[in-house]
Image (cartoon, helix red, strand yellow):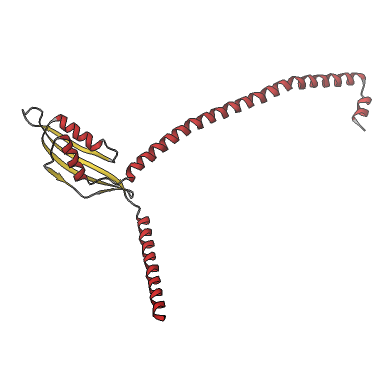
Length: 210
């Protein structure tokens, strides 16, 4: 029996109730459609907003990442250039500032991890004027080389005007070649020398056979 047949077997009252129920269901369905569409649009709008914010964050962070990468590259570039010998470097800076260095000490280099090394020189200055001292410090640490003043003690010389005794430590940092790469270069050089020796021996043998 089909639904239509079943519907025909119902009484008039049951038919009216069923029709009323179907009408109510239809009204509810029609009323639910706008709410569903509105909900979908709201979700789509929220998703779009989140995507826009995410893209904006990525662009902003991308600029920051590029700036940090540029700063890192510039910093590493400073350490790629070998630093000059500190004794000659300091003497030149002292002469340009009108002072002399009566005492200096060069302790052993200090390793910083596996890639960087610090060479430093401790110097003493006597009866130095403040302006000359400032000029000297600017010449020492104001260049492109990775050289800086890491320790500084300034003592006024009693009642003498503009006269100071100074103890200063100047450090120079440079990047050392990784041991693995150095070993590989040495090994490659040894292999090249071996091949050259073998080639010379072959040539000598050919000359003897002739």
